[in-house]
Length: 255
Image 1 (spheres, rainbow, N blue to C red):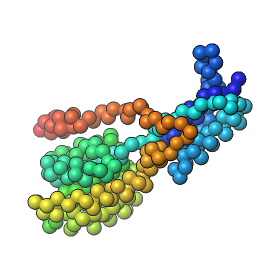
Image 2 (image 1 turned 90 degrees about the vertical axis):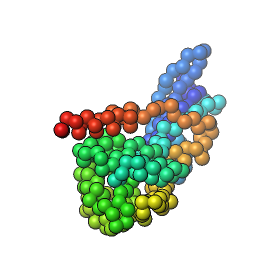
Image 3 (image 1 turned 30 degrees about the horizontal axis):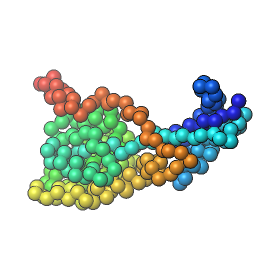
Image 4 (image 1 turned 60 degrees about the horizontal axis):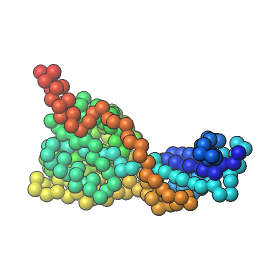
């Protein structure tokens, strides 16, 4: 029986292919194959998956139809850490705008350290925007957050846009912990000034190196229509609407 339908899924790591035979209204699965996703040309990965299917003895019909989808990750997950909640939230929103990032949570100095640590462990952000303190202002909160990030030691990149007088010490902590860090000018150099453009550019640059597959899927065609995957990300147990309430309950229990 020859395959007359071939379905691909282009993922961030692997491109998978599955061969089917449709005859008399009956769909029969024949074989599957996979190949590491190729960022330069995703068609190469698709052909690799095809080759694995052919190696299993499956023959392709001359009129075989190909379909494809893309399940590669979308925007980068971002957590913003700062000193004042309102200011940090506003800065995070402005920085993430058009930069290819999704603000998953905003935490401030009002939250206990163990709660900030829990947020990082639960969300596993791709980007951590570390702000806080005007130039010449608070340094303690920035360094405390730097210690928390080093303790969790995820795979995310830290955009260091805090009090310029705290940046060198914070960057040294990240370097010692092996955490990628990009220093940018303070996003809040004075209480009345918001400077988000350098941080936005840094996130855009990080997005181009950490999550290139979504753009590749949009720009390439494997002789078929590229359909965005309907797969949804697993729900996070620390939903944004629950975080302040969780923090409040922690403080109440501590008291």
